[in-house]
Length: 232
Image (cartoon, rainbow, N blue to C red; front, side):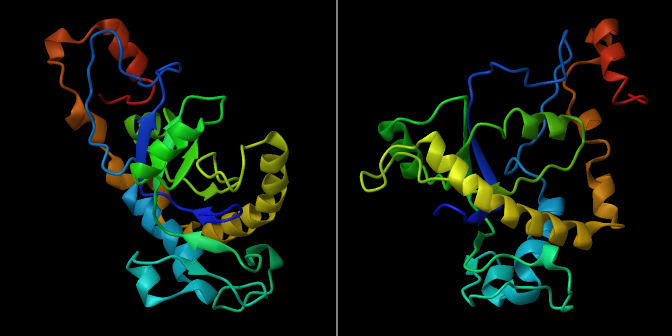
């Protein structure tokens, strides 16, 4: 994946070190939740439909998640509704990857070449420093969480591209800002008013994941959790 590509990852590998708090469950209350891919499948499906499968980027293979799609027309791609809203237009030559494995490392830092090559051997597609613990905390809070990545560099695995620099990253970040605005507009146009935003499919997830017996749960810990889960 090259700089300025868009990636909607469906898997994550945790390489953080627990520097930041990674759970709401403390004081003797233990909760285990299935991670799946690390992101919410239901909201993810709607995001992919909005960004990839509709309008000029629609294709049967992409809809099955079997390929990446690219706008190579040289013109901005608008929705099939032929909207005149320029904010919903993706810039030309933008490649959108509708799946991928994200490596989340402890920041702030750039990877060494050895680390970068290791992550590629694991099947990693993109790398960042800000997916975890956010994704895990969102799941514990029964919030649907999906990530949309804008690639800024090749990391450090290739001798041909050199080391990552702040200047390189910032240059691509500026261009990615235009793409991000278009992607966000597409998503908002697609999901506004839909039930998926309420994340009802996650209701009760935490209650079924608590492993600690009621008599073993500390009063203080349960009081803290009652802010998010009043009926627990």
